[in-house]
Image (cartoon, rainbow, N blue to C red; front, side, top):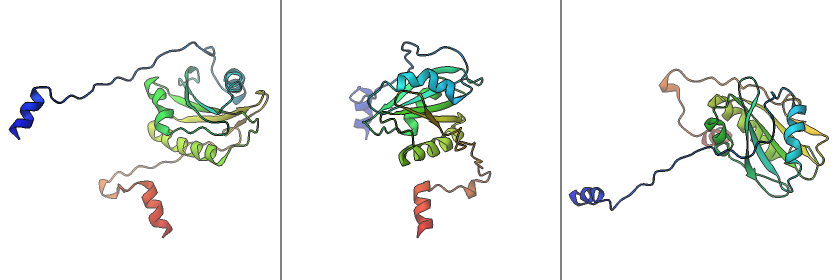
Length: 185
């Protein structure tokens, strides 16, 4: 045991130190607030519609809906792009965003949300609420950017009513997936 401690002190063991930083690229749009899906689609949709594969973008917003930045979080295949909430929220946390919106493209021009699009939106509504960075919309653009699909405009986004336990004895430490599987039996 003493030998391991000495080995550590002799620098036989090292632990990498990492840093996470935002790096700014060239701006895409101005400082005007995004108050409607039309404004978002009009500014960012033109860029998104040029991609030949699905791309998921996160627009980080200040409390008055002014865009702070946009983060292209995932570049996928012709008809799908995957992103985990941790990748979607990373730039939002680092940007001190008050709110965020998701946007992705459908190169096919079909704006109907897929099952995966709907599931991602539902998951992000919940995760964003817990993180304190509400998801204000998820917009799908495609084709020539003349039309778009807005989850908010269709009434599919609302703030969830999440209640938190106040007594530690009532906290269920099992993952939600395990809890759901137990209910199904």
